[in-house]
Amino acid sequence: MLRATHASALLDLPQPLHLALGVFDGVHVGHRAVIQAAQTSARETRGSWGVVTFDPHPIRLLAPERAPRQLLASLDHKARLLERMGAEFLLALSFDHALAALSAAEFIGLLQQGGAIASISVGEDWRFGKGREGDVKLLRQIAQEQGWVINALPPVMHEGERISSTRIRQSIRDGALANAAAMIGRPYGIEGVVVKGQQLGRTIGFPTANLALGEEQLPPDGVWAVHVTCDSDHWTGVANLGMRPTVDGTQRVFEVHLFDTAPELYGKTLEVEFVHYLRGERKFESLEALKAQIEQDAMVARAALSADDA
Image (cartoon, rainbow, N blue to C red; front, top):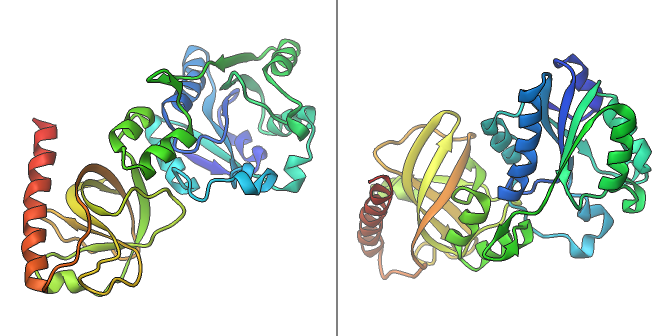
């Protein structure tokens, strides 16, 4: 998948272009409807299809007081999710004051620097241009002049309410991961780079990969059964998110013990999906007591994950 920050980079792709436009935080079920509309348009005609998004999230510039502190997916994580969907390009436009000042017509002109446009897919309430002056009605007017197809998708509902990144973030904060997964269309997960920890797990027979925590939304602290992906490798395991009160309790950490393998992972990016919540964090009277509990956690996690595959 081609990743670019300027539309002109798309000129080298097979033309014409089929664009899905949006922020797409989390690439949830509603986002996927928009993205798949671009994919369908490309299949029905010809050319290349992909996503146009913004980095950082526009609300962080336009209304920082309302901006979420944490996102559902970093830009790199979003790129990997889109690549799995088959997207042929990701154009991540830098959302700065200059871009925010473009009129609706100027923004469309910027997209046209990538080559011939065949279709544009958006949510039906999508707005663009300075002061949010552009809407689907304007897009259709431009499309009629240019010979484009406009796919304006209605919101996707879950339990009678519109799916949104805000709803999903709240579900994750509340620990309602099954509800979040239903709206995302997959178990919720975060990405992190493996860094060196205290290596205490090795001394008690449970080596862990310690992930640097970034800007992605975290679920409640505790012990989780997880799926782990690194490049083309997939594993299962048990993870602890929290303060590690038995050891030091000074900072929040996220550590993952992989079942039946101990690859060298320092410096690599792991995607960890939270599949089953096992228990909350608690302080143990000794490392031996902690080790016994981890053995129990691993057994329960294996059983829960095996039941999912049955």
